[in-house]
Length: 293
Image 1 (tube, rainbow, N blue to C red):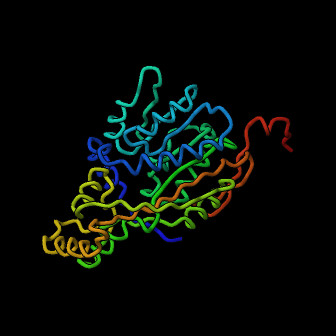
Image 2: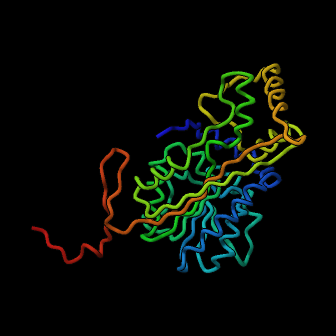
Image 3: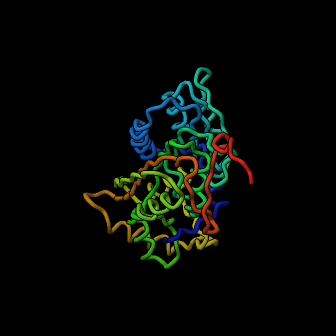
């Protein structure tokens, strides 16, 4: 499996700084949110607990709370400022809880979540076995995982423009649909279904795209990124290369979006552990009546 190489502390800082500006730039995130809400139609039960991982400013969490008014809905995010910003989406009639947590280490009991939802968060997590292993751990048997993430063609124009300027990574790298599907199956998730959509957003000039990325917190978090200030000459070279890509007078930016859903495995289904072994889980009730010899 190919790997990405994210600096988790930098991811937290980037999104923490963007908490105030995020909703000024999240048109694509809202569009993708609609795709995830459609996938929730596969879940035919009335969930008791719904978890929104990478909830950001809580706009999507509020939609989940509206859809499932009788459920406990929890917004989890790595960046505390994002969760503070989410307070504005909490209403007296439809409250939801907020928890600052890492997606690979959720503070929830085993098999306690009916629906696990995540909109454009998983692309910032480079340990897929840990990520999907945690999803399996918290999902109830038959619970629904539904998520979206970015694929490798995301911002391919910006990546190519930077490649004209220098050989350093300036745009984060994302995994493709096949890597995601393999990781989901290896973790024990059942019947995964993945789809890819491509969106092309256009701008009058490259600087507006860069401003939008900063406003979203979606800036470079690669561990191999340059740590010193970028030279003006390199920056101007990148802008010139991007200008050469104009189509009908506009600057294009491609976003490859993977949407997926899968089901929590039944009790007793073995799953692979990070060490390469397998682990099977059973409820206490299923073991009652057995006798030791």
